[in-house]
Amino acid sequence: MASIKFFVRSKTSAAQIYIRFTLGFRNEFQSKTGLTVNSADWSKTGFPRQNTTENKKTSAKLKGLETYILENYNNDFSKGVIFSKDWLSEKINTFFNRIDIQEDDSVFLIYLKNFIEFKESISGYTACTIRKLKNLQDRFQQYQKKKKKIFLIQDINAKVLIDFKNFLVVECSLMETTAVRFVKNLKTVIFDAETNGKHINHQVRGFSTGTTNTEYKVFLSFDELENIKSIQTLNTDWDIAKDWLIVGCYMGQRVSDLLRMSKRMIYTKTDSDGNSFRFLEITQQKTNEKVIIPLHGEVETILKKYNGDFPPTFANHPDSNATLFNRHIKKVCELAGIDEMIRGKVYNEEKKKNEIVETEKCNLVSSHVCRRSFATNFYGNKMFTTPQIMAITGHKTETMFLNYIGKTADDWAMQTAKTFKEIQMKKLS
Image (cartoon, rainbow, N blue to C red):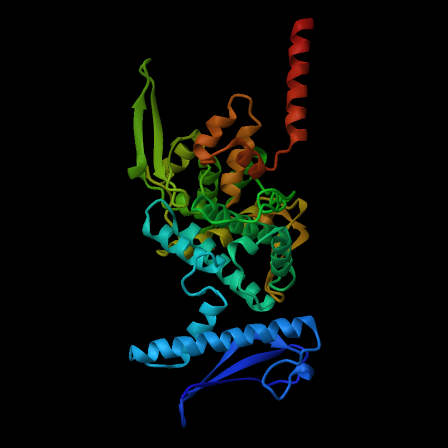
């Protein structure tokens, strides 16, 4: 004979209500009902006292659950079903119409897991993109654990986005710009869910995550590159790093693409006037986009130094190679007198996080200075259009490009004002 008893274990204002399902001697199962009650209101009858509206509602739910489980027991007993704690939990969840968080992709983390698996299965997404999504997965799991809540996609509104961003900054000690990128990636996943028929909160669409376009855009000017070219050192690694740095600032690529360049990627093309030009064709690892880069004279000079090829690399593994390149070019810039005091991001070994500090420019130089220097230097040259430069850097939109080099509406206005003045001066002359 099956019987049901409800009970509480703690003496708190929000005590969890448990169910004990007994099927004879030594054959009983216990589970949480998911309902809570003030333990002071729990009576010996196995139900809450009927002293508040909330307690009356809770009692009605428990009685309904009791009836439902006993009815299902009778039905399943005749079918020879084996009863267990899992059977009991399943009936509780079904009665309260609760989701199975292991399967229902209306749960944000379940959708994100499926989203990552799908991206991994197709060739159009790089390891970098997958890594960002998995980082988001880890951070949001931490956030859920702190909030003690499973978030559905439709639960994520402006308040949650702000709270998640603050959690990343305060609890995880991430920089503001890094936290903004996490929130942007989260929104990307939510919008993907919407395209697949999921209901999302209307506040997400109008929510501004802030900007990662900080004032700390480090690049090397043409004059600084001339100073770097002129240094002489007896350290072979520094010499090689100097050459790669010059090449990088005239090729406009990320370090993951720069340090794998070889003469096999170079070809010659002749125009209709019979003039020959040399180009390098490479598929960017991060975006999987093919870019074609004309070889600048400065690059050709360095290629001649290495018998038509690029400088040697520092290590066999790409990550180690990039790490050593980053380390060496700081020294190269120090030797070249790149010591202007500026504010920028420096890693604090004690705190294990990046901080914004004022320091010499050489300390802020990293491999990314190559791509940004190319974009910034040639953007300021009227002989080149923005689309020409973007075709080499691989930026998809002009907005992304200008954000990358740190240009604002004021910069646009000043550039236009100068052009107006030049036109006016030509009319007067």
